[in-house]
Length: 247
Image (cartoon, rainbow, N blue to C red):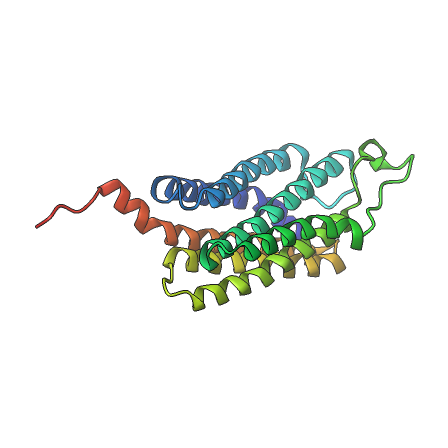
């Protein structure tokens, strides 16, 4: 399974990049002003997917071997993972703010939650740095992979909990926005899939099971992007066609 995934990973990266490119176009054309933060997020995901796919082809990053190139790819992968997880948390907070309105306490509560989630990883999980003289010593400014994994799990778990709050706000809202509803579904799939996949991979970081968990992560992400494409397709099509002429 590991060898199969090593061959499949670049193709999955290309497919993911294609779907993300379509999504970026749909959001930019149809709902850029309303969902500017989501546009920023998916644009970063597209940039990172292309970059990591190229890095994987050059560094063979998905190959489970302890090498200098593998360590470099791991740093690129996990640094991007923390960035996208943070963007997801900020995104779900902004969506709750949009749906719940703009009371001051809601604004301060959401701001506090975002700051707390950015600080908690350094409080709950002590970053462990490579020992001098080890293969990773040249990258000693970066914590170990378990810290990244735990931090990513925490952020995705936070996104999942906040997404439940978003659902509650949507159910209590008089004006239920179909786009935000579908974005929430995709966001929930992203967060739950990432939290579950990273949790399982934390206990099996080598061997065929790791390849299965990686594939699971890739497929849940693709499913979420497809859901978001469906959410923004009608708005983009309407924007391209222009307002309907009166009969």
